[in-house]
Length: 176
Image 1 (cartoon, helix red, strand yellow):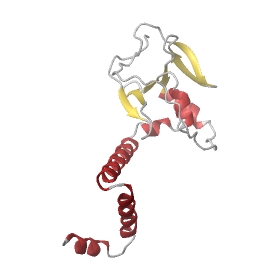
Image 2 (cartoon, rainbow, N blue to C red):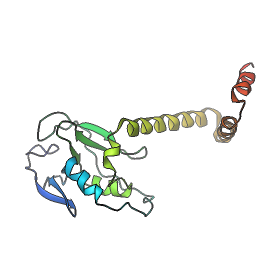
Image 3 (tube, rainbow, N blue to C red):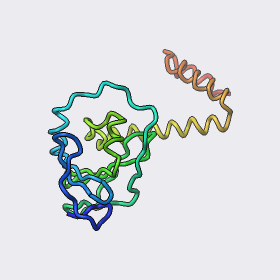
Image 4 (cartoon, rainbow, N blue to C red):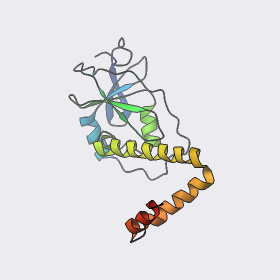
């Protein structure tokens, strides 16, 4: 099998972690992980207890579409987290994930190394999109009305969401 990123190097057997086998590229240091083997490995791991590192080192991500080295179909890209640009590439047919060099370490820093399949769910991806949308809305609000006023609006929003008669209050405010 050829590396989906380099296209020229042959993938060779390697170990990402103890008891987690993969096929690695000696040239770009990426790894093709069978999610079947991964799930078995993850079931035997203890959950991480230390907090995530505040300064994440973000490895270089493959931005181009990759094809699965097994079936030659285009792999789907899944975003990891809102503050991280890296995306994991997954072949839905072969149940294989491509990790660019350093992405396994990034998963560990984000405490996602034992819950990687959650990243591939619609729920996870929808939550990330919603977070990004809310972040953009807050940024526009702060740019438009200023930091102090935006903080007051956010405080009012929190207050009004806790009110029993929220709709009555909003109806009253909309009349102006």
